Length: 79
Image (cartoon, rainbow, N blue to C red; front, side, top):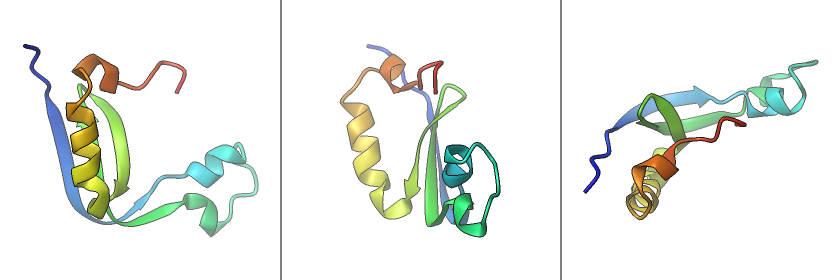
């Protein structure tokens, strides 16, 4: 069986994902383009961030990752 090494970061008061800024190609960024997540968590797997979201959704995210082999939890090079 394959060993999966994941690190989980919790208790993040506010995480800025910059998703809105990315969608606008970083042009004319407004505060809402920083796409903040309050009470956030991060899952890292083999040096890659594989999930970010509200900490209340962390258990579900971890459960979904257990169902897939660890190599499938890595983001594609296109992301």
